[in-house]
Length: 154
Image: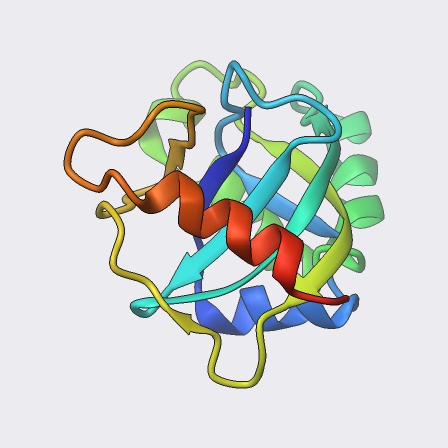
């Protein structure tokens, strides 16, 4: 199922430029599968979309976790220290020591232009699923997303 992902405009630009091929997230939506489309929204704009290629869970604490963090820091376009802080710094994760994050692998970015497109859809905190049926408050959202996918060239 496709999603609309809330993301900082700088990170969206890096994904859409192809310099960021991994997005670090503390969660993985249950219904997100390889081949699904991720629409990137931030700052009131829809910046573009990309294809979800899969996710790698963060391993448990120890040497494996450090190696994993080092291996994903460059494609995620962040320093290792930032990746470590983001994925393990939250109290809900550090109390259990359990894996606290995922590296989302993204491919085939399509940029909607320097200023993106105005986004008037539902508020996105982390992500929202897009469905084949109209959104109750935004019935034209699905048609708009389909239009963007089919009328925007990579």
